[in-house]
Length: 151
Ligand SMILES: CC(C)(COP(=O)(O)OP(=O)(O)OC[C@H]1O[C@@H](n2cnc3c(N)ncnc32)[C@H](O)[C@@H]1OP(=O)(O)O)[C@@H](O)C(=O)NCCC(=O)NCCS
Image (tube, rainbow, N blue to C red; front, side, top):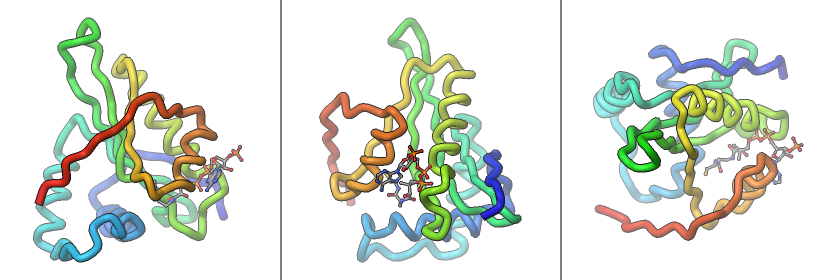
């Protein structure tokens, strides 16, 4: 695999990013896929939101990984924002080569540039391989997460 470059997503990356998200869709089994018009609307909302940083890893002209970092303004912690990472995926063929590590490193750099005091993420309990990955990168399981699934 040629060396991956981490960069901010461009509008023309949308289809490749949605394709990568298919890997995560086990979590939404049974839910209908976004149709093209809905995907375009969702993309415009997220891409146009200055607090969302959609990153991609590109190698050999292909988008092979992505994540989104959201920077959240904050009243607590003396006004320092916090950040959340979501939608972390590397294409199956390109795993185990440092791409995920590079994506998370760039997310950390961006969060630091906004003076965030922490970055959080949640990962479904079934994703034990992803948990090993996050631990390897120095993330610690410091809280107990709860979620309320909405229809
Ligand atoms: C989790 C995921 C993003 C990791 O991406 P990746 O590019 O393969 O990870 P990297 O190659 O950068 O690995 C970074 C480190 O984590 C380790 N690691 C990666 N996957 C691992 C696993 N399944 N088990 C143990 N360690 C793992 C690597 O060995 C590496 O350590 P090293 O640098 O000391 O050798 C990727 O496997 C993926 O897309 N999985 C499916 C989607 C998913 O589960 N996303 C997370 C949703 S919360």
